[in-house]
Amino acid sequence: MSASLNPAYADVLDLILTAPEGDETAVEAVRTRDAQLTKPPGSLGELERLVEHLARWQGKAKPTLDNPMVTIFAGNHGVTDQGVSAFPREVTAQMVANFTNGGAAISRICALHELNLRVFELALELPTGDITREAALDDRMCAATIAYGMEAIAGRPDLICLGEMGIGNTTVAAAVFAALFGGSGADWVGRGTGVDDAGLARKADAVDRAVALHKQELVHPLAILARLGGREIAAMFGALIAARHQKIPVIVDGFVATSAAAIAHAVNPAAIDHCIFGHTSAEAGHARALAAMDGKGLLDLGMRLGEGTGAALAAVLAKTALELHNSMATFAEAAVSGKSG
Image (cartoon, rainbow, N blue to C red):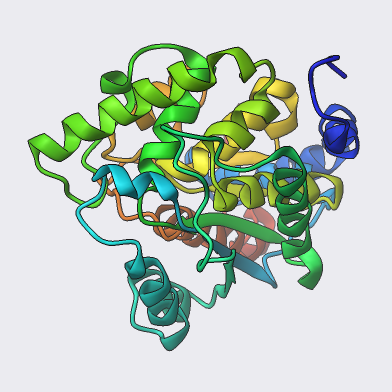
């Protein structure tokens, strides 16, 4: 551990650095069956690779999606005092109620496609510190929130989609990306909830001031998470790491969820090999962040809602891919001639 990193992160670091490898034997079993299905080899493209991904990280020759889960972590942010959002932070709690009452976009996607939805409220009554004036979280609180996020896998899902809700969290995610990958606030901020030009300028300025204020303390990715991040980002980070150790593949949602994956990647690039980026957000900084990690969104639908919506739609594709893999007839079963020669 870096001498300047708080010992509170010792267990977390150990988990990141000892991330187990995937099961290539399971992948070969999937490829063997795929070669027998009534289609030209490789003709389903990314759908075939999705099934391989499930097999590799579940460690199953016959992967399952019996208990896919969308997790939404909700947190509030002190930086909203800087006028960086078009909505007040009370909306975070109001949207959490909307999720559980079935009225949000993610609620309808999950209901339609039989995805379990769990919402985790993270001290909504206690916003994080305003990152332009103080640290978002102290190290012990950050480590505790990471640990809380690890509990999200308690229901033993066979796939987790990481989503979030938090007014102001595109600003803190932009600050995390700026600290990790360089650049100014203007390089990373976007419209978020729909701020006007003045609001966009305030967001960029807030990011620049926050990174400058904490510059001497941004000595490690986990320090960046604590100083500039938020509770929902820390919790998603925890869920991502725990999923790896419990053989659960992960689909990461958009701009904010990707900042949690970026922290893990900065510590150990291999630690996010079990993750798929569900989509490329309309937030311009998201494509930039994905490129910095040599990543690519599965979908590109011009979405920027958050809530796990892009990840959930990618999970729908994964369910479709697995159904095709399991249920298509083989050449022998369908009495179809195989490839000649």
